[in-house]
Image: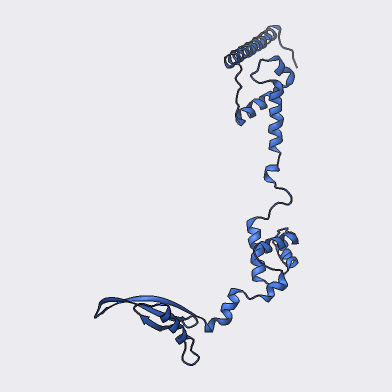
Length: 236
């Protein structure tokens, strides 16, 4: 590679020296500006935001401790580098995302455990654990037991002995009925009178039966309606 001519070498050296001198002048000005700011602040302590600490720490880490000591900074080199170490530690610190012991089971998995135990009353903890594993959920038997206990669900043998509300309705649907009132306003010799109508609905057939009508239903009237409805021979 041919060497540069002497005039060109001189120009490059002169240009580099001029740029270095300009950079030194800029640094000298910024240092003097920092001294003035520190004099203005006096004994007052500067308050930095996390973003400001992050920006200063990043620049300080690039310069290094030796060069920082040669400069007049508003923060000591040790403080700047300590900020850098703290920010790096925070970045890789997962303690805020962890609780003590095992991580808690998320709500979706808890709901799935309860659903499996409710819909499959013969499934024990191990069977539920296997079903969860098939869905790629790694949950211990102890966690499953805790979730079911918190929801008032017993282990499989005890769950089999109890009848669910859905099973009760299915078994007794043909003999279940519901009762309620509606009102009717009627013109009578005393004027407009509101009557309460007690009706019964057969849930399996949806048929409606009028059980009684009264202008002023009271406890005695309701007791009589109950006897009428449950009479062995003529009751509902």
